[in-house]
Length: 107
Image 1 (cartoon, rainbow, N blue to C red):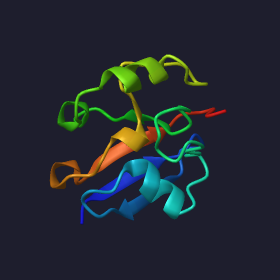
Image 2: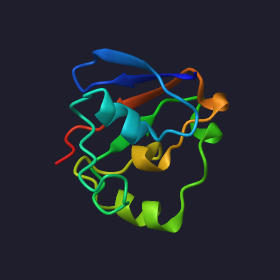
Image 3: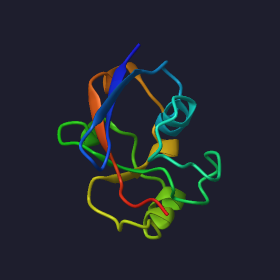
Image 4: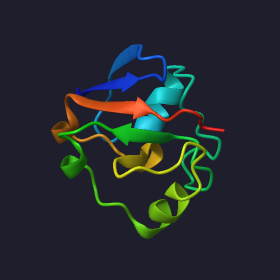
């Protein structure tokens, strides 16, 4: 299983083994990672699962689709070039070693 590291706003790290085919948002909420809210359950309507993809992995992510692009304009933290919604990042083998920063704040 690919390993993904979540970095909290306080710089603490949580490393998870995530099954291929699982979204980062689902894995984070299933493991009680507080910074990933996921209010809409992955329906792409809330932007409360905002993460920042660390260097070296952004080009391995699927392209931002129009609905995600629009929702990223409404994140509480504000958008950056490495912003993604974790509900739209479904784990693949190529994501092994991925590190994402949890946006602060989400709400």
